[in-house]
Every structure is written in C-alpha cells, then in structure tokens.
Length: 373
Image 1 (tube, rainbow, N blue to C red):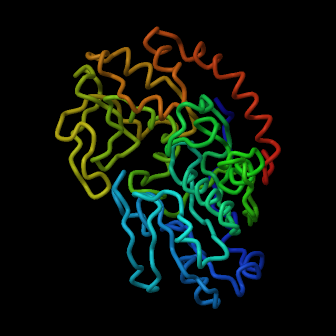
Image 2 (image 1 turned 90 degrees about the vertical axis):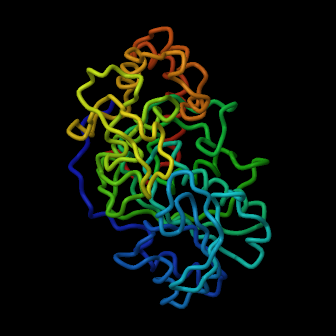
Image 3 (image 1 turned 45 degrees about the horizontal axis):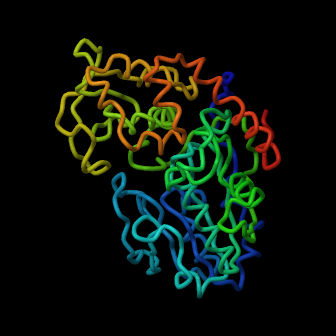
C-alpha cells in the first residue's frame, strides 16, 4: 500500500504542448500518429495542431476504443477515414495489432500520444510496445509525447510471468507499474523486450512540472468505462474481477465504481442490473440482478488491494465457477487463484510478490524521467 499522495493538480504541461521540442523533429518528415481522444494540445487535437503547423501527417493509427475513443469495450476497430482531416485511419485493435510493413512504408516517424492509466492490462501500453517493435523492424523513429500517469505514485501487484504474455500484458511489469508511457517506452527498449531484442529509435518528450508524487486528474475520460477520476483510481483493483463472475458495473452508469454478482448474498448492501449501453454492448451478467458493493464513496487513494477479491470469493455461493479462464491473463501469475482458493490472507499473498517486485522496482529507477517526490 502506498502513502497518501499529494493533492490532485492539473498544472503539468503535456509533452504534446511543448511543440518547440518536437516540431523540429517532424519538419520535412512523413508522419504517422498513434492517437485517440486524449491526444489534445490545449483544446485542439494533435492531428489538427500538426496540420496547422504544416507537418506532413499521412496516417492516423487507432488503438482500442478507436480514434475518437467512443467504441465499446472489446469492440473491433475498423479502418476508415477521419471526416475532419480526411486522413486515413488504420486500426491497431482488430485483425492487426502491430503495424504492418505496408502501413509504415510511406512513413518516417511515428508519434505516440495517448493517455494511459498506469495498469498493466490497460491495452494502450501494448499498442505502444507493438508500435515500437514494428518501427524497430522497419527502421522508423518513434516519438512519445509523454503524459502523467494518474496512478504513477506507487508500484504494486504481481509481476507478469512469461507464460501469461498476451495483449492485456505484454511486458514483465507489475499490475501497477508506476511509469508514464515515455518511461515505459525507455524500459521496453532498454531491457530488450522487443522481438529479437531489437532497439527502436526512440525520443521521449517529457511532461513539464510533473513528479511521481503529483496526482493528475484526467481532463478527458481515457476510455468509455473509466468516466471519473475515482474509477481510474479503482481500475487496477477492480479489473481483476473481469477474470471472475463478478460485474464491475459495465452496462451501468457506474463502471469500475460498483461490483456485484448474482452469486453473491442478497444481503449485500447494494444491487444493480447491467444492461447494454454504448460503452458496453454486451456487459457481463447482462439483465441479471447483481448483489454487491457501491464503492463510489470509498477512499480512492487506497491503492491496489485484494480485499474485495478475497471477500467476494469467500462470500460466493458458486465458488466452483467464480474464476474464468481469463483470470490468469489479467493477474499475470498462476499462483493467485490457488492462493485465494486456499484461503491465504492478503498479507501472505503479498509476501510471495516481494522478490520479483523488488527486482522490478530497482530496474524501474533506471528509466524514471521524473522525481519520485
């Protein structure tokens, strides 16, 4: 658990706002942008900002939820064209998750500017990894316009084990990795995590006025089911429930702020019924009354905790079907399911994380761009 963070602020200047540092690197280059609705320079989208500056933007690459960030969870993103700029939009969340040589052949530079939330299974970090990997293979440059990590003030959780490497966890980092995208990009390069140990030509434009003790409140929702600062705080803890029969409130107005399931006791103090909505067209436990907890008034600074997961397993009326096959992909380790079934306490479980977590924390220090306090 982490110490109390500082007051939430919104003053840091994003990498994208520091045009004097990166515009010279783009002049005369053919540019591809890996962006979504969070890629703002003040009130202007990065695409529009660069076009006004005369930068030769050729392609937009869209991650999960799409270029405008409006697609439902898990929805396949299709290629298309941006109505405003007329630029082609190529999907990196569908049949193709790594840019192909054909996609990159007419580009010199790839600019990555997407707001992350600091949890390993939030897929924008996997998109970054694959963009870097493709760039390394095709001899292209990647520029990361950095943004604060709203959960960057601590590091916690089990480190991903290699056998559970998937798109919801590509790199051997903890659930809460404590890095900005710029720092993670440097770690991916520095530790040789790209295929074949290749290195990507990488430039990071850091945030001004940010430290890892700074609590940053996101001005734009990073994805449809993280609509509030509180949901962003709770995301790392509650996302583990997506590997169980417990709903995290997808299909309600309270995603990642409530938890419940039909297999929980009806004496639970809160209940809800998930129904399809634009953010979640097929929510887990659709149409079923879920008994659970309303966490909207809880302290969002509790950090990453297993207390809810342990409680809901212990109270489940169907323990045999509590976990689903995706649980290990999210937690990144084979041990946690068995530890929970065996009745281990959170303190006992945390002790098993310490060796790998300690090694990670020592490695992390090599790549930090911002002070810890």
